[in-house]
Image 1: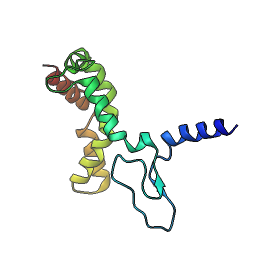
Image 2: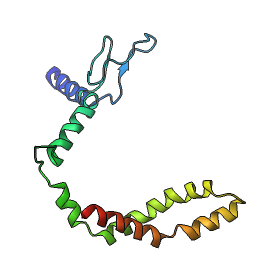
Image 3: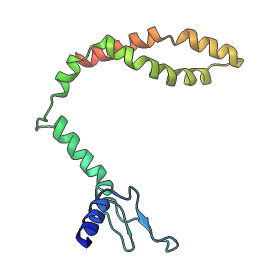
Length: 138
């Protein structure tokens, strides 16, 4: 029973807590990045090393200069259908771009909204995204 409890605690401590935790009121700050333990506190091993692990995974999958990765990023981009990607990205891009354009325009709010709607159509954004993807593919 004790063995089960200590094993369960050990596995929990690998992943938790996500942020550094220490005894409240002691004023102890988190240790150096990448270190799971401090003087009187703890952060899960995986969360404390997420930056280092993420960098290594990206290098392994996508490769780095002079060392090929598991996938060839260029061939993946060449296989993208520009029209399909544009259709997928256009609504989210429009949602982000319209408020920016409205803020830059002058005049009453309803006029700015109408101008933004006229200038930033889904079709225009789709065409722009398709052009960008095509340029990246070449």
